Length: 411
Image (tube, rainbow, N blue to C red; front, side, top):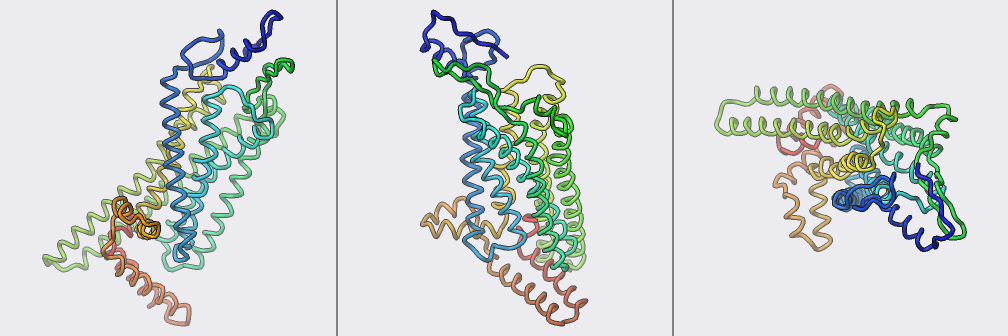
């Protein structure tokens, strides 16, 4: 830490100007030996990347939440998890990213101790909630595909997933609330100079029941390894189940020209489904890996010098996940695309909606098939034959897949 001392023959204006220049991390000049800095060009690039993530991520997640709120038909258990992910990612883009950008651009924290603690814990909570929501969506869809007829169990598990991820996010954010504090490096009440840095205090970590090293390892397991394992496990099983369904459907097709074309269409849908599932896993793994590696390296001091620039690059890469999630989980979902188009039409910008989204020619048939599936389940609940109606429901599910190419892809 650099220590400053004001000489008696210097004016307050001079030192205020000096500290103001030191406060900007991205600067080309060396204001004072021993203070870290980086080039302005790198600062412009990092700021532009953050602004892109903030703007597009906030808009995409807001539209996703708006569609669920305005349309009662979209308020399903499955979409509830997507809404929860959009809500957490919206907070990531509007709270976490701007706060982190400020701490990257400016060395000193002027907002007081309370906001320092709130900022540190709130950033962690938003990130935990976002990644846990991704894992919950994967596990919820796994239950939906593997056990399609056990609706009541699905709803109970979904509720358990939802409560669990919120409670776990709050628990993991508590240590950040305690450890985050201001470190005063200089204060002169005469000149009105107060230089404080907001970060996690090592001396506070030493007084806590859990060490910083143990906490970092816990976050690596719960925030990165467990969600990644959930994604790989769930979507691998889903892809395998879809492959079996496609294979059974191909066997049942007779060798006619129209059915050969339909078979090729099914194979193409299978390929797109697998590609989308791989993209979901790859986006999460690639986006969050650099930040977790950085925290491990910094916590265990494998590299002695902490670089703000390196942290900013790793953090903005992680923030890209919050920007891409609406695209993966909502815009690629046919039901959401349909509602997005309706929302644009309602706002008087139908042409814009037509440019961004693709109209589904089989939308009406899909809606009718969904109503027929719901009727089948209702008859079963009212005393119909469980075995027969469950088989009918399975067949309706597969027919719905055949009618709508995007049904598999939005799983």
